[in-house]
Image (cartoon, rainbow over all chains, first blue to last red; front, side, top):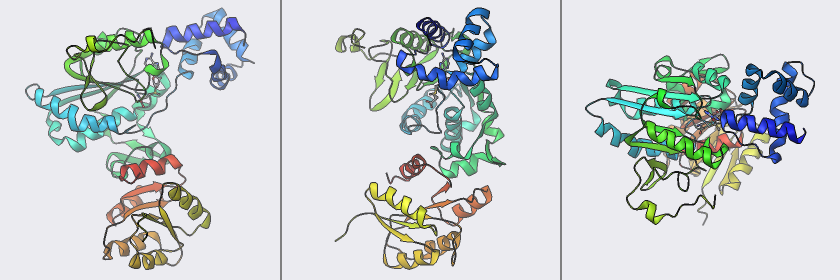
Length: 285
Length: 124
Ligand SMILES: C[S@@+](CC[C@H](N)C(=O)[O-])C[C@H]1O[C@@H](n2cnc3c(N)ncnc32)[C@H](O)[C@@H]1O
């Protein structure tokens, strides 16, 4: 791949999805884009990029953006964010929303849906009183192929063995041939939509909890800041933002504060004096 | 005196026992092996493993019969039992859970799955 092609496709991906591809990751183009080239009977990667540049074909560009996303996920991934939800975040919200009896949770960058379904299972199993509430779990992702899979809610044996306790599997899934399908009552708790985090988030409405895990890592600093600020506008003032294991708000957005004792959980209200205590890290990152 | 935690691996395949034993030794367990359900029960009459990895289909006494006997044994501490088998029908899984299995792994599986399950059981 020549330098001009690399710059073209790197810029395209950055603009469309926020994904940053550095030259050392060029091999990703080969493994992920060659199958698309083959599908369209194009002989090489160079040919594929030439097609994209010449015809500005949106469908083809969409396929490329989709193929370049990393969709790795699992049920109850990392466990501790779900423990934090169960022990602290949800009990607090349930108390404060006792009058409205309404909770909205967003799994931003939901991939194939395991995170959203894990939340649905937890609400059912550990908070039976919420059965009388209006609970909305919204899962969104930029990739059409994973959103379609999330909607279908069918998982392989390999997928259901990652992170899911066996009791949850037999309770919440039906076996259909080689696949495990989430039961309809749980499926109905979650609404999956195609959605780009770089677009306007306003149409999604306001949420009590936002899980935005393992997606900011793919973005550059200004994009992370932009997305964190946009999420802040959709987050109830007493709500919570949960990030992935390698992600943080500090040094990126000063609109959040940490929540004592809870790793990866942030409050949309910065702790008083935090700005004084923590010098901006922008230059260092 | 040996205070190490014991893992008992019950499988009629010596290859699987070897892989599983290596895995648990790396985690700091002492490993005992049994090739039939009967051997597993004999072992548990004298020792108290912390965890038992139990295959389903074995000669002499299969895993589910072994599990039922194990759960009726009077042991100083209740071992965690993880069924580890090619049986993947939901009815079989339910049968094992009803008989007292704590977790269930469908073969083939990866090391990560095993680690996940041990973490869920609070053992790793
Ligand atoms: C590694 S997965 C994380 C899934 C899940 N949140 C978790 O932590 O397990 C990252 C997901 O982010 C999605 N993604 C990447 N860029 C995005 C964007 N600009 N808008 C929405 N989703 C995006 C990808 O399609 C992918 O499914």
